Image 1 (cartoon, rainbow, N blue to C red):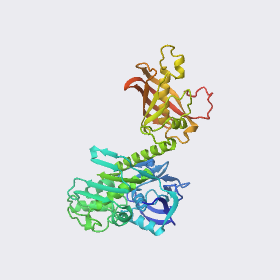
Image 2: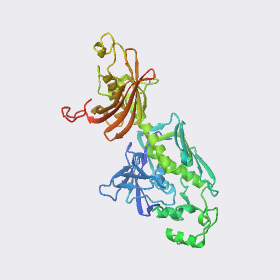
Image 3: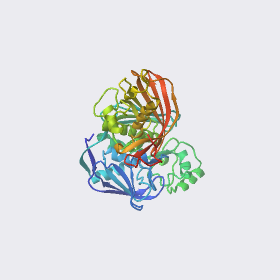
Image 4: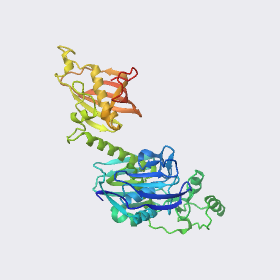
Length: 476
C-alpha cells in the first residue's frame, strides 16, 4: 500500500442515470489538496454545498448509501467510493449536478477507467492509516450479519453471502492484494437483485433508473406471461424478456461465477471508506449489507478518533494508563490544589471513562476535615467524579483548552461509606445522553471494589473566556 496520499492529475467526467432516482447526472472527479479527503459537491445547488464522504453524514441505507448535509443530498455513493479506495485515491472532489451519481453498468469499473485515464498524482503528505491492533466486531444476530476486522499489515476483504435462495446458494470471495486484484477481479462486479423484489422496489420509489444493462436480475420464481408483461412495462423495459428459472433474466452472462458476492465486497469497500481513514486490516464479512457496513464504518471512525485524541495528549506509553496527570493538565483547566484525578485507565469515546485518585494524608482538605479523623469531603468526591466526566465530555470538542465543563445539576447523590487516607478512589463515569453542548452522565466511585459514592451529573460546555459573572451561568 502506498505510503503517501494521492489525488488525480486532471478532471474526469462521466454522465448517466442514477439507479434509484432515475435522474440524469453528470459527475466530475477533480483534484484536491492533501488531507482534504473525499467530498461530494452539489454544483447544481446555490453555493455548491459540499458533503464530506464520512459516516457522520449517512442518512439512508435502503438498497444504497445516502449522504446529506443540510438540504444537499447524494444517493448511492458506494460504487464511486469503492473505485477511489481500490485505486488508493485519498483526496478528490466529486462534483455532481443532481442527487445521484450515474449507475453506469452497475459496477465500479467505469469510474475506475475514468480515474485511471485522468492519471494518479502522488502527494507529499503521508497517508493516515488506521492499523487494527485488536479484533473489532459488529454483529446483528437477527439478520445473521457478522463483520470482523483482524490485525494485518495490509488491506484484505473476505465476504460470504447466503440469501437462503437455491438460485445463488452460498457464495464466497476474497480480495488479498489491492494493487493486483481490485481492477481486474472486483471493480466490474455488477449490482443485482432477485426477480421477486423488482416490483416491490419500484413501488417503494427505488430502481427508477434500473434496467437490464446496469443490473443483474436473478430469476427465482415462475411468472405468467401477463405478470412478466406488467413488470417490464412498469420498469420501462422495451426489449423482449427471456425467463429462465434459476438463472439470470434474459440469460445475461455473468462476468464472474460468483459476481454477486464480488459486488457485495465492492459495496463493503465503498461503505467502509466512510470511516474517513485508510485501513490496514483483514475484514471478514458474513452477509454484509449497507446498514451493517455503515455501522462497522462508524465503529472504526470512532476508534480512530479516540486513538488520535489519546496520542494528542499522552506522549509517554505507560502500561494500563490512557492519560497520565501531565495529559490531564492539558485537557482539564484544574490545577493544585483542585485537580482531583491522577490518571485515566479506561476511555471509550462518548461512552465511558474510568479515573483514579490516590487519597493520601497529605491532601490539603484533611487539615480541617476532620482533625484527628480525616475523611474526604463528599463534595470533593463528587468533584473528582465530575472532573473524570469532564475528560469524557470534552473529548469531541475542538480546542478543549478554550472550553470549560460546568455543572448544571447534581441529582441522586449518595454516599455509602467514608473515603480516608490510603484509599484509592476509582471513578467510573458513563455518558447517558448528549445533545450538542449539554450532557447527562452517571458517575460512581469505588474503593477496593466497594461502592462509596454515586450521582447523576448534568454539565454544559462553555467558552472559557465567557463572562463568569453572569448570574445564569452554570457553576462548577
